[in-house]
Image: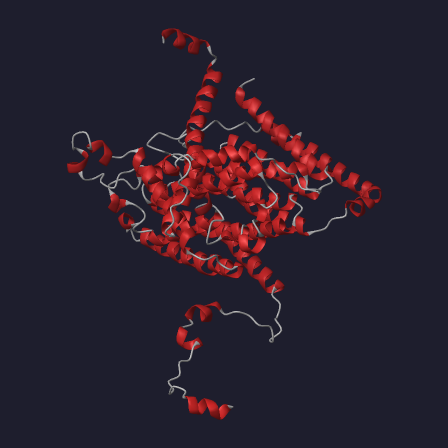
Length: 354
Length: 206
């Protein structure tokens, strides 16, 4: 161990920081990719049980190795390049779809102090990076040289641009309540048990945020960009093998991201709901479980992911004009009114309730 | 040479190369992509200048919204590149004139004495928040210009809507969604009470 430490000391300081940062990135990305893989299994299982089926149950115990089998299958499939497709953009688009979904995780605080970069504009950074996701879809649609794909790109572009506004306004409400753009400070502003979480005073904004989050990730019931029954599979109709898998990874990583951000903004991130009950947190051995910790964060993410899957199993797909109407005529006015009354409440000094 | 300078030159050279590519590449979609790259690099330089709010907002507004609409329009056009390049020689003198004028102005400004006497401001502490500083100045010193800008923007939005709004032909059918949502089964289906048909009444029909 000592010899290892002495070797570490020989490494120049800049290289040391670089290595530490790279290791942190790996420590975030690897579990994230695994979580994505098992979210697909959870999706198939949950929807299966909701439809009184068993879901995948052949590979491994109760289907537990199904995601691994799927990955291996996708890796060995041929990547087909359509005739007259734009080669560079065709291969660049899946990368553009996945990268922002991973980059945004760099500012997520998993626990107090556990963030790759705890920057003071974390909330804006997340909004900016998630707004880049749509480029993957638009470029894929254009580069595929296919009518269905370009239709899907048009739909996705209009939808994401419209729902970003409602999402931004919902985030403005949180920022007014917390008085900070830093994600860890937003979490700490909610400390003091479940009653202090922003989900109670800002319940409307949480609903708006999550609806726009579902629309931003192009998930059912807002999945007109994919629309299997209308435009086959939309933007990824021409993709196969790993190129398709990257889109898939990006979509699920984005779902996890939206869930994580919803948990941080409205449910107090890593804070425990029993934080203020010292009778529970002081219990021997199991008291740790009732205290603040990363496990609460994961539980909250799992809750929102379950909502995603529940929506998909329950709601029929929206028509395109209905999507636009919901975004522009309902969600944006709701958030504007909410922000106005929140501002009045803060101005009158009702801050504890907001 | 410190690492900050290396990073600055990295982003600056990417920015210049991307900006040149925007005007030189033939494919308009590539030009839009290079413009996105240019926005990214300039936002990185802004963040290095401790203007993290402006840097992130640049990505949010220009890359996340404006460029999406740009790409939207470019993809809808069927652009014939040969026609676009036809006038190149004809417009070359005018273009060169404009380029020389811009270059001369920049050289004039950058070599003037006022620029040379400006000293780089000291670095702020790590807890300095660009967002707060910007908000404070916008809502105190510059509150009237800020509000006027907001009003001008609202007027522009309304004007854009009014200018593009066309009167529809009254015979055009449209859907009223609140009607659709409010519809009840009794509006669509009429249940009639009537006596059961008998065989004799059936035979009358024959």
